[in-house]
Length: 257
Ligand SMILES: Nc1nc2c(ncn2[C@@H]2O[C@H](COP(=O)(O)OP(=O)(O)OP(=O)(O)O)[C@@H](O)[C@H]2O)c(=O)[nH]1
Ligand SMILES: [Mg+2]
Image (tube, rainbow, N blue to C red; front, side):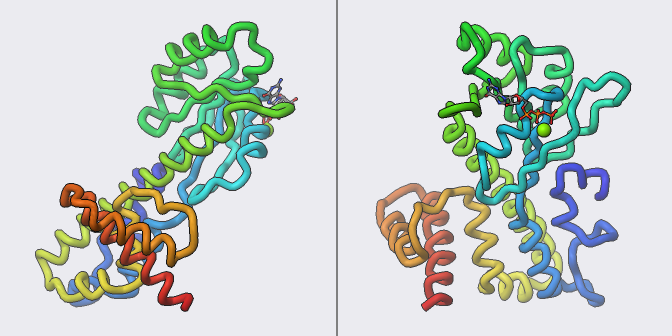
Protein backbone atom coordinates (compact mmCIF):
# COMPACT_ATOMS: atom_id res chain seq x y z
CA UNK A 1 0.00 0.00 0.00
CA UNK A 2 2.90 2.35 0.70
CA UNK A 3 3.58 2.64 -3.04
CA UNK A 4 0.39 4.64 -3.34
CA UNK A 5 1.20 6.81 -0.38
CA UNK A 6 2.57 9.48 -2.69
CA UNK A 7 -1.03 10.22 -3.47
CA UNK A 8 -1.76 10.31 0.24
CA UNK A 9 -4.78 8.14 -0.22
CA UNK A 10 -4.20 4.46 0.14
CA UNK A 11 -2.93 4.86 3.67
CA UNK A 12 -6.30 6.16 4.66
CA UNK A 13 -7.90 2.92 3.66
CA UNK A 14 -5.55 0.50 5.31
CA UNK A 15 -3.60 0.01 8.48
CA UNK A 16 0.20 -0.08 8.63
CA UNK A 17 0.22 -3.59 7.23
CA UNK A 18 -1.96 -2.74 4.27
CA UNK A 19 -5.04 -4.38 5.73
CA UNK A 20 -8.40 -2.82 6.16
CA UNK A 21 -9.14 -2.12 9.80
CA UNK A 22 -10.53 -5.19 11.52
CA UNK A 23 -10.22 -6.46 15.08
CA UNK A 24 -8.75 -9.78 16.22
CA UNK A 25 -11.92 -11.56 15.22
CA UNK A 26 -11.90 -10.12 11.73
CA UNK A 27 -14.56 -7.56 12.58
CA UNK A 28 -14.55 -3.91 11.73
CA UNK A 29 -13.40 -2.11 14.87
CA UNK A 30 -15.20 1.10 15.83
CA UNK A 31 -11.98 2.93 16.74
CA UNK A 32 -10.39 2.05 13.43
CA UNK A 33 -13.46 3.10 11.51
CA UNK A 34 -13.28 6.48 13.18
CA UNK A 35 -9.58 6.74 12.45
CA UNK A 36 -10.08 5.85 8.79
CA UNK A 37 -12.91 8.35 8.49
CA UNK A 38 -10.71 11.05 10.04
CA UNK A 39 -8.00 10.22 7.51
CA UNK A 40 -10.43 10.57 4.63
CA UNK A 41 -11.32 14.03 5.93
CA UNK A 42 -7.72 15.17 6.45
CA UNK A 43 -6.41 18.23 4.62
CA UNK A 44 -5.64 17.64 0.94
CA UNK A 45 -1.99 18.25 0.13
CA UNK A 46 -1.69 20.86 -2.62
CA UNK A 47 1.80 21.16 -4.05
CA UNK A 48 2.88 24.44 -5.67
CA UNK A 49 5.66 23.66 -8.10
CA UNK A 50 7.56 25.18 -11.02
CA UNK A 51 10.93 26.65 -11.93
CA UNK A 52 12.87 28.88 -9.54
CA UNK A 53 11.57 32.42 -9.30
CA UNK A 54 8.39 31.89 -11.33
CA UNK A 55 6.25 33.15 -8.47
CA UNK A 56 5.33 30.10 -6.38
CA UNK A 57 5.67 31.84 -3.00
CA UNK A 58 3.68 34.82 -4.27
CA UNK A 59 0.81 32.55 -5.28
CA UNK A 60 0.79 30.80 -1.89
CA UNK A 61 0.74 34.21 -0.17
CA UNK A 62 -1.96 35.62 -2.48
CA UNK A 63 -4.20 32.59 -1.99
CA UNK A 64 -4.01 32.58 1.79
CA UNK A 65 -5.85 29.68 3.46
CA UNK A 66 -7.73 27.37 1.09
CA UNK A 67 -10.53 25.42 2.74
CA UNK A 68 -9.72 21.76 3.27
CA UNK A 69 -6.20 22.07 1.85
CA UNK A 70 -2.62 22.29 2.99
CA UNK A 71 -0.54 24.34 0.53
CA UNK A 72 3.11 23.38 0.18
CA UNK A 73 5.70 25.12 -1.99
CA UNK A 74 7.98 22.40 -3.33
CA UNK A 75 11.64 22.74 -4.30
CA UNK A 76 12.25 24.50 -7.60
CA UNK A 77 12.39 22.44 -10.80
CA UNK A 78 15.01 22.67 -13.53
CA UNK A 79 17.89 23.63 -11.22
CA UNK A 80 21.24 22.82 -12.80
CA UNK A 81 22.85 19.93 -10.97
CA UNK A 82 19.69 18.96 -9.11
CA UNK A 83 17.21 16.27 -10.12
CA UNK A 84 13.62 17.48 -10.31
CA UNK A 85 11.81 16.45 -7.11
CA UNK A 86 9.04 13.86 -7.50
CA UNK A 87 5.56 15.36 -7.45
CA UNK A 88 3.88 14.11 -4.31
CA UNK A 89 0.87 16.42 -3.92
CA UNK A 90 -2.66 15.13 -4.33
CA UNK A 91 -3.16 18.27 -6.40
CA UNK A 92 -0.22 19.77 -8.29
CA UNK A 93 -0.38 23.48 -9.07
CA UNK A 94 2.20 23.89 -11.84
CA UNK A 95 3.29 27.52 -12.05
CA UNK A 96 4.40 28.36 -15.59
CA UNK A 97 5.99 31.47 -17.02
CA UNK A 98 5.65 32.22 -20.72
CA UNK A 99 7.37 30.88 -22.79
CA UNK A 100 6.88 27.36 -21.38
CA UNK A 101 9.92 25.08 -21.14
CA UNK A 102 10.36 21.34 -21.60
CA UNK A 103 10.54 20.95 -17.83
CA UNK A 104 6.97 22.29 -17.60
CA UNK A 105 5.71 19.73 -20.11
CA UNK A 106 7.52 16.96 -18.24
CA UNK A 107 6.02 18.03 -14.90
CA UNK A 108 2.56 18.24 -16.45
CA UNK A 109 2.89 14.70 -17.79
CA UNK A 110 4.06 13.42 -14.41
CA UNK A 111 1.24 15.14 -12.55
CA UNK A 112 -1.35 13.76 -15.01
CA UNK A 113 -4.83 14.03 -13.49
CA UNK A 114 -3.50 15.82 -10.40
CA UNK A 115 -2.41 18.78 -12.56
CA UNK A 116 -3.69 22.33 -12.18
CA UNK A 117 -1.54 24.60 -14.40
CA UNK A 118 -1.30 28.34 -13.83
CA UNK A 119 0.15 30.97 -16.17
CA UNK A 120 1.79 33.64 -13.98
CA UNK A 121 2.87 37.26 -14.16
CA UNK A 122 0.20 38.04 -16.75
CA UNK A 123 0.73 41.74 -15.93
CA UNK A 124 4.11 41.50 -17.72
CA UNK A 125 2.73 39.93 -20.91
CA UNK A 126 2.16 41.96 -24.08
CA UNK A 127 -0.25 39.35 -25.43
CA UNK A 128 -1.68 37.26 -22.56
CA UNK A 129 -4.10 35.35 -24.83
CA UNK A 130 -1.33 33.98 -27.04
CA UNK A 131 0.73 33.14 -23.96
CA UNK A 132 -2.23 31.24 -22.53
CA UNK A 133 -2.57 29.28 -25.79
CA UNK A 134 1.14 28.44 -25.78
CA UNK A 135 1.17 27.28 -22.17
CA UNK A 136 -2.08 25.32 -22.53
CA UNK A 137 -0.60 23.49 -25.53
CA UNK A 138 2.65 22.78 -23.65
CA UNK A 139 0.95 21.31 -20.58
CA UNK A 140 -2.01 19.81 -22.44
CA UNK A 141 -4.53 21.14 -19.95
CA UNK A 142 -6.65 24.26 -19.43
CA UNK A 143 -4.55 26.87 -17.69
CA UNK A 144 -5.60 29.66 -15.31
CA UNK A 145 -4.03 33.12 -15.85
CA UNK A 146 -2.87 34.84 -12.67
CA UNK A 147 -0.90 37.85 -11.48
CA UNK A 148 -0.08 38.55 -7.84
CA UNK A 149 1.44 42.06 -7.87
CA UNK A 150 -0.46 45.27 -7.27
CA UNK A 151 -4.19 44.63 -7.44
CA UNK A 152 -3.52 41.14 -8.81
CA UNK A 153 -5.81 39.18 -11.12
CA UNK A 154 -7.20 35.69 -11.33
CA UNK A 155 -6.65 34.72 -7.69
CA UNK A 156 -10.34 34.35 -6.71
CA UNK A 157 -10.90 32.11 -9.72
CA UNK A 158 -7.83 30.02 -8.85
CA UNK A 159 -9.06 29.67 -5.26
CA UNK A 160 -12.50 28.58 -6.49
CA UNK A 161 -11.06 25.95 -8.83
CA UNK A 162 -8.74 24.72 -6.09
CA UNK A 163 -11.55 24.42 -3.57
CA UNK A 164 -13.61 22.45 -6.09
CA UNK A 165 -10.70 20.12 -6.75
CA UNK A 166 -10.01 19.70 -3.02
CA UNK A 167 -13.64 18.77 -2.46
CA UNK A 168 -13.48 16.27 -5.34
CA UNK A 169 -10.37 14.62 -3.84
CA UNK A 170 -12.10 14.33 -0.47
CA UNK A 171 -15.24 12.93 -2.08
CA UNK A 172 -13.17 10.31 -3.92
CA UNK A 173 -11.46 9.32 -0.66
CA UNK A 174 -14.79 9.03 1.18
CA UNK A 175 -16.44 7.10 -1.66
CA UNK A 176 -13.55 4.67 -1.88
CA UNK A 177 -13.47 4.14 1.87
CA UNK A 178 -17.22 3.59 2.08
CA UNK A 179 -17.11 1.11 -0.79
CA UNK A 180 -14.35 -0.87 0.87
CA UNK A 181 -16.06 -0.84 4.24
CA UNK A 182 -19.32 -1.92 2.63
CA UNK A 183 -17.63 -4.82 0.85
CA UNK A 184 -16.00 -5.78 4.10
CA UNK A 185 -19.34 -5.60 5.91
CA UNK A 186 -20.94 -7.80 3.23
CA UNK A 187 -18.35 -10.46 3.91
CA UNK A 188 -18.33 -10.17 7.67
CA UNK A 189 -21.10 -8.95 9.89
CA UNK A 190 -22.82 -5.70 8.99
CA UNK A 191 -23.43 -4.48 12.55
CA UNK A 192 -20.25 -2.47 13.09
CA UNK A 193 -20.54 -0.72 9.75
CA UNK A 194 -24.20 0.11 10.23
CA UNK A 195 -23.44 1.42 13.72
CA UNK A 196 -20.60 3.49 12.34
CA UNK A 197 -22.91 5.09 9.76
CA UNK A 198 -25.00 6.51 12.61
CA UNK A 199 -22.01 8.11 14.39
CA UNK A 200 -20.91 11.71 13.78
CA UNK A 201 -17.87 10.44 11.88
CA UNK A 202 -20.03 8.17 9.71
CA UNK A 203 -22.55 10.91 8.95
CA UNK A 204 -19.68 13.25 8.06
CA UNK A 205 -18.06 10.67 5.78
CA UNK A 206 -21.28 10.06 3.85
CA UNK A 207 -21.76 13.82 3.46
CA UNK A 208 -18.14 14.17 2.28
CA UNK A 209 -18.69 11.45 -0.33
CA UNK A 210 -21.33 13.59 -2.07
CA UNK A 211 -18.63 16.05 -3.16
CA UNK A 212 -21.17 18.88 -2.90
CA UNK A 213 -20.33 22.28 -1.43
CA UNK A 214 -22.28 23.51 1.56
CA UNK A 215 -23.79 26.97 1.10
CA UNK A 216 -22.24 29.62 3.33
CA UNK A 217 -23.88 30.10 6.70
CA UNK A 218 -24.23 28.45 10.09
CA UNK A 219 -25.23 24.83 10.67
CA UNK A 220 -28.88 25.72 11.07
CA UNK A 221 -29.15 27.61 7.78
CA UNK A 222 -27.23 24.84 6.01
CA UNK A 223 -29.61 22.23 7.42
CA UNK A 224 -32.55 24.30 6.21
CA UNK A 225 -31.01 24.70 2.78
CA UNK A 226 -30.48 20.95 2.33
CA UNK A 227 -33.96 20.21 3.65
CA UNK A 228 -35.36 22.48 0.94
CA UNK A 229 -33.23 20.60 -1.62
CA UNK A 230 -34.85 17.36 -0.49
CA UNK A 231 -38.26 18.56 -1.66
CA UNK A 232 -37.40 19.59 -5.20
CA UNK A 233 -38.29 16.32 -6.92
CA UNK A 234 -34.70 15.92 -8.12
CA UNK A 235 -33.20 12.62 -9.27
CA UNK A 236 -32.71 9.96 -6.56
CA UNK A 237 -28.95 10.58 -6.40
CA UNK A 238 -29.41 14.30 -5.79
CA UNK A 239 -32.03 13.52 -3.19
CA UNK A 240 -29.75 11.11 -1.38
CA UNK A 241 -26.96 13.69 -1.44
CA UNK A 242 -29.25 16.39 -0.03
CA UNK A 243 -30.36 13.99 2.69
CA UNK A 244 -26.75 13.18 3.61
CA UNK A 245 -25.80 16.86 3.80
CA UNK A 246 -28.93 17.66 5.76
CA UNK A 247 -28.13 14.97 8.30
CA UNK A 248 -24.61 16.28 8.65
CA UNK A 249 -25.64 19.92 9.13
CA UNK A 250 -28.47 18.94 11.48
CA UNK A 251 -26.00 16.98 13.64
CA UNK A 252 -23.73 19.96 13.90
CA UNK A 253 -26.63 22.23 14.70
CA UNK A 254 -27.88 19.90 17.47
CA UNK A 255 -24.41 19.54 18.89
CA UNK A 256 -24.00 23.30 19.13
CA UNK A 257 -27.49 23.93 20.48
N1 LIG B 1 5.34 41.28 -12.39
C1 LIG B 1 5.07 40.31 -11.56
N2 LIG B 1 6.02 39.87 -10.71
C2 LIG B 1 5.72 38.86 -9.87
C3 LIG B 1 4.46 38.27 -9.84
N3 LIG B 1 4.44 37.28 -8.91
C4 LIG B 1 5.68 37.27 -8.37
N4 LIG B 1 6.47 38.22 -8.93
C5 LIG B 1 7.86 38.52 -8.63
O1 LIG B 1 8.68 37.43 -9.04
C6 LIG B 1 9.75 37.24 -8.12
C7 LIG B 1 9.75 35.81 -7.61
O2 LIG B 1 8.55 35.58 -6.92
P1 LIG B 1 8.42 34.41 -5.85
O3 LIG B 1 6.99 34.35 -5.46
O4 LIG B 1 9.42 34.56 -4.78
O5 LIG B 1 8.81 33.16 -6.77
P2 LIG B 1 9.23 31.69 -6.30
O6 LIG B 1 8.87 30.78 -7.42
O7 LIG B 1 8.65 31.38 -4.97
O8 LIG B 1 10.81 31.87 -6.21
P3 LIG B 1 11.88 30.96 -5.42
O9 LIG B 1 11.19 30.26 -4.29
O10 LIG B 1 12.90 31.94 -4.96
O11 LIG B 1 12.42 30.01 -6.44
C8 LIG B 1 9.56 38.27 -7.01
O12 LIG B 1 10.37 39.36 -7.28
C9 LIG B 1 8.10 38.65 -7.14
O13 LIG B 1 7.83 39.94 -6.69
C10 LIG B 1 3.43 38.76 -10.73
O14 LIG B 1 2.31 38.31 -10.79
N5 LIG B 1 3.81 39.77 -11.57
MG1 LIG C 1 9.57 30.65 -3.21
